[in-house]
Image (cartoon, rainbow, N blue to C red; front, side, top):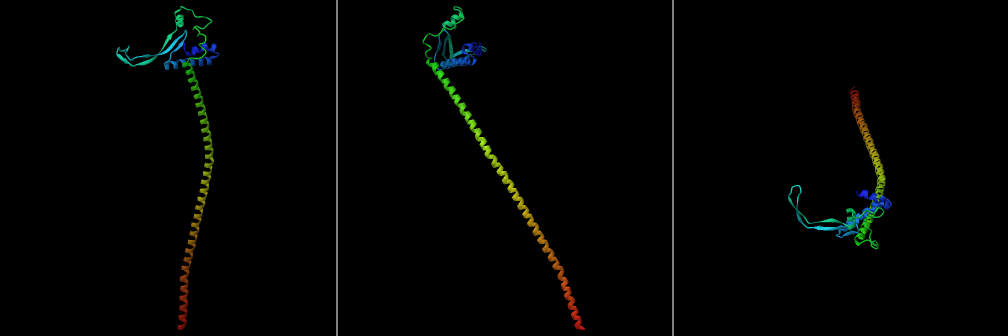
Length: 225
């Protein structure tokens, strides 16, 4: 029988599989914690659990036969109670409609032993701490998500404003370029007009001089006559 089968075996008596699983976990956890702390857990009619110290020793490797040094260690040990032994050996029969292990004497269940009470208190405190940590983590995650949304919402208008500013700057730059091109074209036209005027003046000047020479020649001829 494994743990799952044990839970199924007591599920009807505990009112469901989940309560049975919780009960098994709680019992095993309390026993393990008490034994690790060096305390002895004794269940009347069933047996006792305790921590045993093993000194350093030499042992042999079963495969090679080599002598190996074993360090000092601690191991758990279970000793079956007399009632458990009697049922296994067959000197006593298992009751059909009753609990196999002898019930605890009256008054012994008025309060849990100190070790079991401490273990139960530690487990409850651990559950509370875990629940509080999960709640805090959920709140932190929700806060971060809200902050991220707000930051994104703020960045979106900023991006739009930047795009509009870039468009405006591009328009101004294009206008400046157009104005500069217009000024250059106007300057080129003015220069061309001035050059044309100079050429015309230059052509008229020789004609005037020729006319003056002809007039002077006529006057000289008249005087000679």
